[in-house]
Length: 248
Length: 290
Image 1 (spheres, chains in turn orange, green):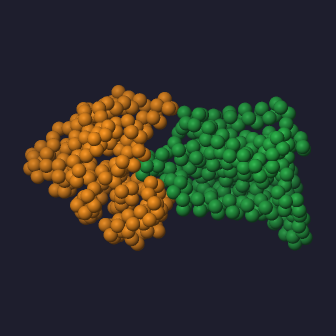
Image 2 (cartoon, each protein chain N blue to C red):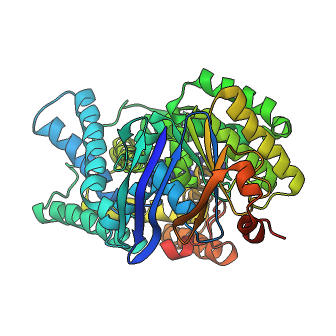
Image 3 (spheres, rainbow over the protein chains, first blue to last red):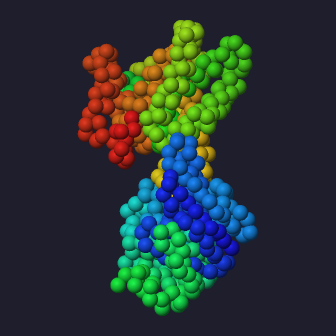
């Protein structure tokens, strides 16, 4: 479904991604494990196309020079230069790092804003679906999203991405800053989305422990390069992973 | 005298809100302080005047054409000028102020000033309400402002483009992940702001005459109302219009007309001291933006 070939991303002269290649097959949950500044967010932004928008805006005002080499193939089509809104139309939807919700808008309005490309009935249907997935959101419907707790905001962020009806859902650190209990709820929801709705998921995370049991395969990124890859159980038993990413 | 002053204060409020709403809309969505706003206001007025008096077009056609021209002009300003300085507050201000200055000074250069440069009132009639003489144009302004603000509220809360406006205003990059095109929305925001400037001119100009000075005046009033209300907040615009509108009229009646200007400036000063982001303002860096 998604194929990233030899991707290199420079911010001015700083190399953020260094010849990274990976593949996500339809119906999989793929993990991307790496510490801070490993290049996880850059990869997510490059796949979702945000980097194209950043590049154009920086170029216009003569700011930072962003360079992207390599290519991204989605459903057999080269989308390396495609604008982010076109990629969204093709079904690639990103939920950004640190769950940035629209703080001034109510939970319901967050869904409505996310439904820019969808009809009102579609938005309502997805909203009902998300409320079954994350029951705590139901009674927060009319609350300003900025007043939600971190966990609730994360639920909203993932649920809101569903409004766009993604085929490939990119989740950038969905477990960041959540309690173990909350992490479990979010993990269960992601697995549910994958199994029940058939959404392919690529998610990034710093810690391997909560992620590896749920993923089909995972990649380990360090300094913008892939260092390891394998199925969930394979990586679980890898001593290097245990040492570096289990947080013990 | 009190009732009369109150009626005129209400009308003054409506006029101020009408002047400020377009400026505020643009700023609220794209963060661009469009300093060409006053020039766009005057341009629309001269445009209608020319179409009526030189081309002898019917009023309705002239008005619709002027609004559409302003919408297009706003979009062009974004596409060809602002797009290059996007996100650099001071460059945006200089660029738009430059455009505004060029337009207004061009009209000054042509010497298009005088009482013959005015627009017709919509309905030439007047009433006596509670012992006060009020003409129909002012009543129309009052009613139109109320409908316009309600309409804008509906637009930004219940239509997909309006909701996209609010999304972009809150978090541009996140809005992009839902397929909202930020350049398109920014273009629309400037364009709509310019269109609202044209509408404001059509309703307000018949009370006076068209002159380049009017452009500076409208810009200053729009800025004052927006700063007091908190830039980008529609509730703030309404509230600030009430405060300035009433303060101006009551000062005029009870203290003296030469004090009116001071009152609104004093209101700005007090608000900036007590709550620098404006009454309804939320962003902390607003003081730096203007």
